[in-house]
Length: 52
Image 1 (cartoon, rainbow, N blue to C red):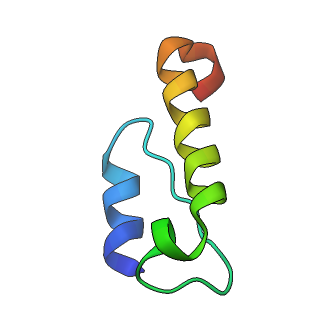
Image 2: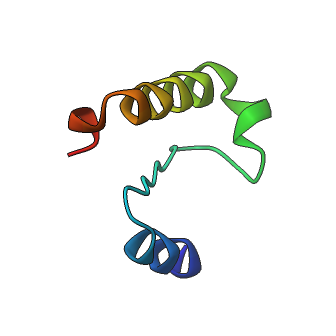
């Protein structure tokens, strides 16, 4: 996770989501959660205030 945390620190507006009890394929293990988080992120791109 250290590598991912460093990327998040360096990329403006990056968001890191940690999913409990989830392995290397969150899109397969927890698809509803992944879709929800991606949807929220994309909505924030349309409305930059949401990213603050």
